[in-house]
Length: 494
Image (cartoon, rainbow, N blue to C red; front, top):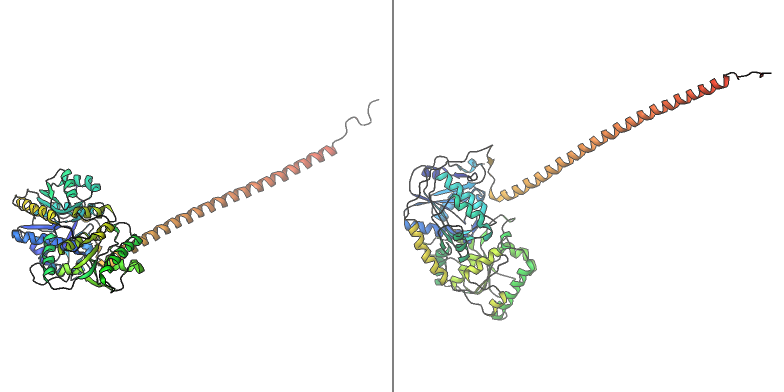
């Protein structure tokens, strides 16, 4: 089985650098170019690890559908401190208007690191595998490592097939269940914990050292499709119980609430993080005032080498719908309840050892200890260092995928989803029009058939009428002939 078509694009600076051979590592994972707090820090964590090794230039891979404007590539360079950025698309695009062209003459890249995220599941697994296989094929990556992956049991069959085609040197699951499932696929696997943890540790250390008045409550909410059933009444009920608990120590005043918006994205039809969820909840959101902290944008601006502390407060209690927000709360020492409305999120919660029942948590709120997970992380980092001492297997690059037909014009991210929706509606309308036209054609055919039948019946009726008249005339002739015929015998015999 060959890899599905993948098309890679870059600006002139990246294309010129990629044309020159040198030690590099392709980095693809949770961050595809969308401003999700945890995904941003996972990429920054992977970059920090490779920079500490100091042997390979990182090449960051993002999704072409995440590009909002012509200046985006420059912002990515600033946010992540990288020089080489690739954009991936499953279809050929014309990105010349924003200064991007297809990568055609790149030198081979020996290393591929698929850093962490919840990629290998029913939501994004097929896409992730397609990107991975496309990178291996075009650039000839012979040293393939995965880390920090959350694996869905329902995706194991597809994952096993992928590993049979492209076997990794080492694979890390960010929770024990994921590590077990990776091992079931027949590859070298271990518990890696999460690739964002080192960045979160630095973030939390600086936040703790900064003098900030603590809040009563930290709240993160998410109603995006991948979080499970959008049961507003259930989520509103959880918030009401947490608000009542916070009110016990507020002393009659309004609780001081920090709303953590972890995913800043304009695709409102796909992403509904904290600010969008407050709007969806309407009067079920129990707080009349709150302060907003844009964690996603903070993560993009956060640099581990800078002394400034990120603006994230401490609190007495937290309710979160985010795995990485829950980890941050744990490292800040804030008791946090991770709301889990489907198996995907229950796996996250179980991996962190957090309580599964809100009422039990509120009776005895405690910050979870991540020390067992951090110990697993330390062991993993040693294993990954050993893996990168291995020479990559030789693999000849297949080169760029061929293009069939004209490339599709680029559409900015802000309009991409809307355009796709409009195109889908247009296709529905066109299909309905075609079906209506076909039906009208059938009606015309039926009308023509009926008219033909009526004409035939009319012809037959006329012929029948003529036959009746002819029969009547014949009968009349017979009657006339009988009347004129002489009577036999005259006067009779004597």
